[in-house]
Length: 208
Length: 168
Image 1 (tube, chains in turn cyan, blue):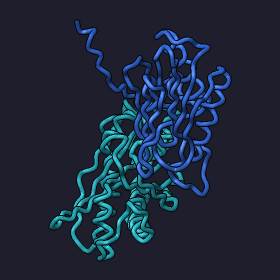
Image 2 (cartoon, helix red, strand yellow):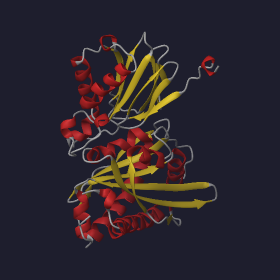
Image 3 (cartoon, chains in turn yellow, blue):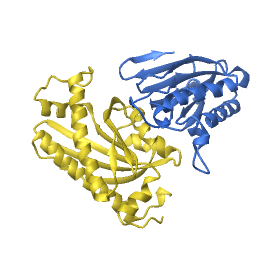
Image 4 (cartoon, one colour):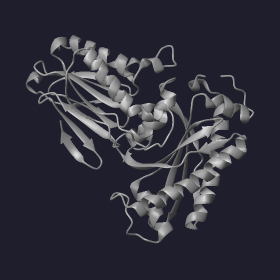
């Protein structure tokens, strides 16, 4: 399947996946921090590998990333990405402890962000699964705090064997309250063979 | 007149990309994770090239026309070829290698999840096959690396988030 030739209908269907997932994730995050969480309208982008890094702030920018491999009928990779400041704001909000820092490998801070990511991404994926009626089993969360380029290439390995670009469904959730910003970025990168299954499940024609 | 001014700039290499240049330029690639940065250079002629290899072997390709810069086995010969056309002497080439980390500590999973060590292995094998000695390397681990090669000094600067900069 040549992803550069997707129809508008197919892109809309994929965007709807992002919409449903992020909506549920925002609700879940909102319960976690007990405040209103907004979501942006998701975007569907077909990007070269270098462009993908630029979207996150360049290959060298430091990000906090939780990676989930999805097993099941439509495998892929989901990232939940924050800047260090955003992740620390979230940790502070959940624990009421503003001394926790991620950069010194504080185990408590790390397990808080891991668990929050697990809950919110679980909500994202279960909405996807319900909507498409496709089984999506997430792996345990894998955490890394490092350069965006190094982290994101992991999610590109499957697709890089068949193409030189990736399709990402990008959804943001955020809350601005006083000065602390809580934000998160979901990137869903379906494996190349998953698209036909996703389209079929959504009742969209598979022809491109 | 302009020849008197020798301005150096940094040549940037993207993912699955390859470039060659001459001193006083430097050559750089950012955010290597499981990818491997292969620098090959001719110390006397002051020419160097850098390949940012994403995958170990072009046999993995499921494309008819694929980007040869993406795979270790196809990128390295092309790098040598481009260096030769820039004046490098193929029997005097040397290499420095960095990258091949495992960014996430997967407990299980496919071979794809252990791609870093496989990339390193494939790069070293190809260099050995071409009789290019590896003078320095910084591979493995679980941290991302940004590397910059100074053609003038033949030193490779390796930067990681936690350890800062080292020169190899």
